[in-house]
Length: 98
Image (tube, rainbow, N blue to C red; front, side, top):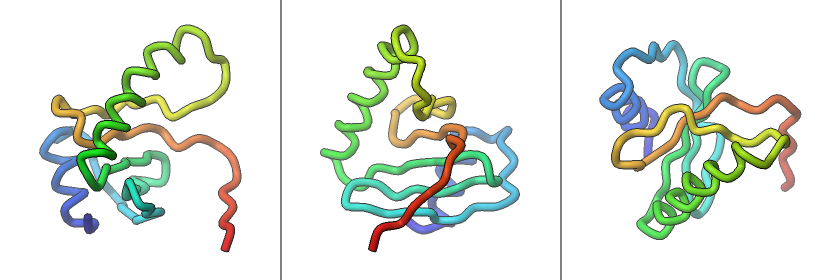
């Protein structure tokens, strides 16, 4: 998924969100992630199996909200078809391992 496509998916589902900047911050075998406006992360599953994993994450969040005090990505942007998620970036330091 390229930046233009990600921006389009986000704005179609969340037209009130003002995107001032978009930057690809990571891509693995299952997802592509973009940082929006310095404080939001949007993650897009690549394949159907990754979409199923995302559905499980969405279900698990309901339990985490009740029982966990640890920080985790709280999906505040969730389109009706659950095709991607958006959340506030967690604080901390990002380390890259080569």
